[in-house]
Length: 357
Ligand code: IPM
Ligand code: MG
Image (cartoon, rainbow, N blue to C red):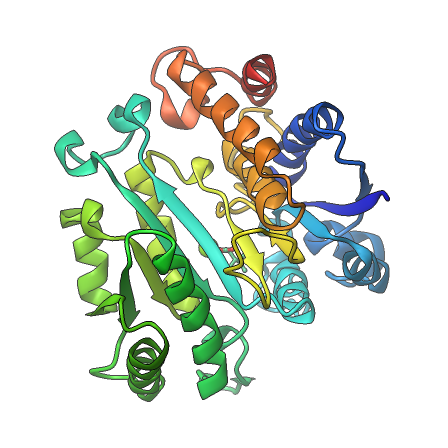
């Protein structure tokens, strides 16, 4: 039976990188007889322009019928006037929430061929393999927002069960890896962080006694990510800290353009996959380079690999894509963000990856 994959290109470089990932997915769809049907829909600024809503009902409906969603990026200067009540980002946040995708996986690995692309010293980068698990549907992103004449409010709220479920997923994933979990909070200042830390301790003590658990304050974590990146295994944190720390961590890999993500709901940690998910690169819409055809498609292509693994029970296809990306990089294929010599454009980089498939 055919399975639907919704494709939401969005704004800026979103359409360029999703088109690249779609070419790769279509190839693997044939090679592995996956019977995937790709259906495109609007999100973000493109959807605001077309129908005044960053998440039109037709898009939400399609996503609910899909086994997986591939997304490019949303946002851009065209829609970011502070007076605007409707913003492209709301489309993405509403979709994450509507699909119940509370668990966002952001793997950060260094690849030997790319160590020079990172601003960090190479000896710090060897063996870096971090899985950041970011809570995605709670916290300050989704709290009450108020704007008054001379003040504004963003409420940060977390319920015990919201923390438990993401910590459980992160702990279960750590048990399949090196069995080390770092929880990041700001419990010296924030009440939500004090609850977060208590819940991490109780979930891990009761359900994951074999796990080695470390707590870090977010400011210290930001530093340790640069001073001892290879020491981390799984890092779990709340929504906004996870957003910020993963942009920072992307520089370990060499570029924001390289990092994929998977946003999952229940069964986020089940090894066999088969859960509904949203897959997107961690980078944004990059308005500064949009339309030039020079964006790095690797983050989106690697997100497509995560889609095969977590939602489509197609681990062989996932591995095939990942090997192709790394083989192309090993042979010197580079987009402008990771190269100083004559770089490949998005299309040529995608061709180099397709050639390895
Ligand atoms: C991300 C992005 C989004 C976020 C924006 C576009 C709303 O930065 O996925 O990291 O903050 O979650
Ligand atoms: Mg971000």
